Image 1 (tube, rainbow, N blue to C red):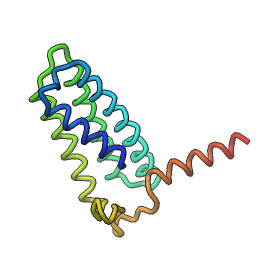
Image 2 (cartoon, rainbow, N blue to C red):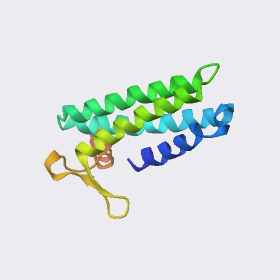
Image 3 (cartoon, rainbow, N blue to C red):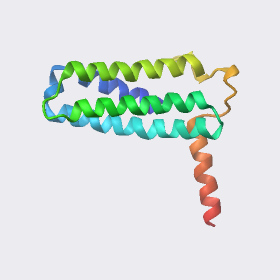
Length: 138
């Protein structure tokens, strides 16, 4: 999830910048959105494996919001206001999921809320999944 926050911070600064209309800036946004897609895909698998339907819904909503931003960034005549609006949808979706499932802060660190019934982390989940796949291949 840290990678998502870092990528989102860069995307926010690029979309809200006068440089947004430059192809290079929009290309960097597309690259960062791809990073976020991968990380959100991992979070989706994590929630799905645990039967957390709301979590799957949040990740699906976020993937849709990322698609809206991608569209706005790749149109022939970019509209910065529309891209900022799409970015707002991303931030709103992140905030809703964090409100439901996350506690802590940047200094102390983040974790799932105890009442969420979630153990582990998406990163740990992926390592375990890769290990299980590797074991089956032996």
